[in-house]
Amino acid sequence: MSTVLVVEDDYSTRLLTVANLRRDFEVVSAEDGNSALDILYSKHIDVIVSDIMMPGMDGYALAREVRSSGNNVPFIFLTAKASPQDKAQGFELGIDDYMVKPIDYAELIWRIRAILRRAQIADSRSITAGGLKVDSAAYTVTYNGKNIELTRKEFDLLFKLLSYPNMIFTKNQLLDEIWGADSASGDDTVKVHISRLRNKIADVEEVDLVSVKGIGYKAVIRA
Image 1 (cartoon, one colour):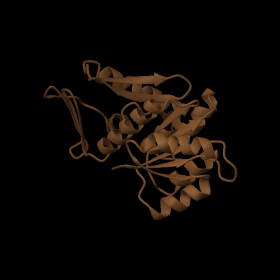
Image 2 (spheres, one colour; image 1 turned 120 degrees about the vertical axis):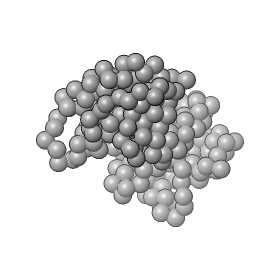
Image 3 (cartoon, helix red, strand yellow; image 1 turned 135 degrees about the vertical axis):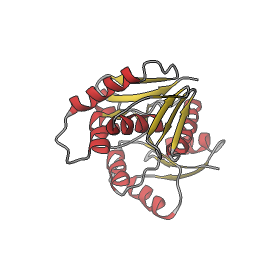
Image 4 (tube, rainbow, N blue to C red; image 1 turned 45 degrees about the vertical axis):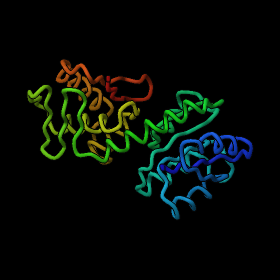
């Protein structure tokens, strides 16, 4: 059974969240970011579900610390902070999903399950979506058996987005991960490569590369 770490400073909200998630997952909880880090160092965690506004180490600081340590555990923010700027800040730090309070716990469970499925896909060296196959070992992309020619950066960008379907990546995240933090490339580089990718996979009915206004991009895989 997957283990979820709930980080929430409000006692009643923490108990309610734990009680709802325990139907489907093993759940441990922490009242702030520092306590959450202690748990992460001592126990395997599959998903973190965290509030943002907490005393001491808040959710942003927790996400920053987790990602800077090289830990890619899936991370969901549950918060009352609903502005695009708040969401962008979270995604810039590398979180995977964002829900605004009050929380629909049935939806939260669906999202956790989806994130766990994406994490399993991300561990694979090949991705299949209908007739599309992306093989990171051979650096090949085929659709219904026909090869699609991509540059190295286009391939890396497509593989990254498809590894985490429905997860939003900011332009800065993609620049850092595909081109490198020291690259002189700017936001337009990502935009141009996304445009080229869309043209090259225009016939792929199972995949859409979606622009999320003010935040970044995501890949949507159709059933």
